Length: 94
Image (cartoon, rainbow, N blue to C red; front, side, top):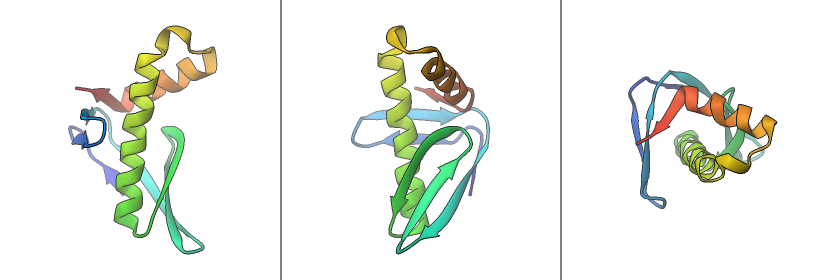
């Protein structure tokens, strides 16, 4: 699934949103009885009973990750800071 530029994604639990700055591809694989969503922009992965649910869970996890990085950016290690910067190339909190 391709995630398009300028897509606005709201996270209902965090009451936070992001806008996609640069398109990226989400890969979906069937593993045993669940679908797994991954992409090249993060090490995060998520599962779901359907491809759509795995994708939605994955997007919400990316928002979780971005919020966590933002809150902890002063104490991030160099590798984590690189991961944060990588993610910010694709998504921005709004």
